[in-house]
Image (cartoon, rainbow, N blue to C red; front, side, top):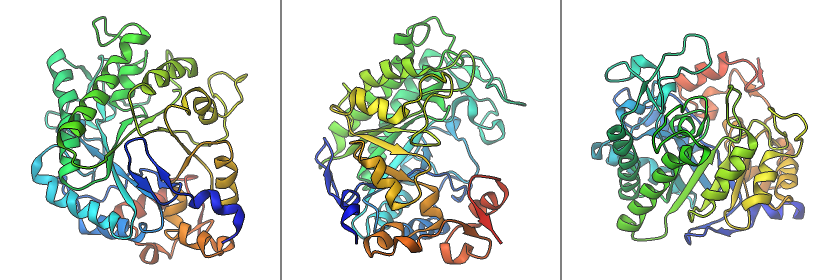
Length: 374
């Protein structure tokens, strides 16, 4: 391994006390490959097994905390204790060679397809449809439903602890329910859960509190609590970068182990305000990085690109597409074989890469997300 890659392989201890062996995380990626009833499947266990061992931390695909929050076909559930045995298998599969297992917990809100929900009715902060063609109008959540959902995130955390995971990542990004409460587009409420910027923070902060209480009550050893956030959104009115900088300031006071900033490209500036050209990840790191470790992500493919991003002082980089195409990304860089990392996805490589059929079909049909070659 070249000395310039030392930064990648430096150990790190999270604020909670959990130690990881390097600075690479597997970014959470939906794989559509669980059983229809929410159970973890054998095919997804094989997919996870192929990509673990080298990376320091593996964040799973998102698990829904209530049936009303299911967002994808083939998504696994953490909404009932009956799922703990399967989740335990998943945690053990990831941890087999020293990788830490973090499960992402989530509620889809108005992004949940009606046909996947018990009563075919998505829920959200307010009865406002997303700005996309054919989007269903959600039903505004009652205060009782809000409180039950907050508790559901705490219950999901207990199940994650009982299943043996090393942590949870609260999914507050990518336009799902927590972001919907923070967004002035999807949250038009006039009670304590909406209205002002401050009130729009109340729901996600209450969920962080619920998760932390579950950790305090049930965890017998250090346990990671991370939070994923999208710094902006395209809808109008929508979340602006200055809103997010105020929100992350609050999040940094919550004792989180990390804040994971979800963007398409690590170095891109604001897409809403063209004069703000500095990397949004770097900007958030400058604001709160001395209080909460930041996870960067987005279009960093080579070891050199990862090192360049780490040189900003941001302690972690999450890789997604790179680990789909190259499950042994870390091992190859460590062995000095970084020039052999796959840069494209061959149409003949499904079996070799251990990618389940539902995910493979999507990879072959979504243009531009991965470079595919014949």
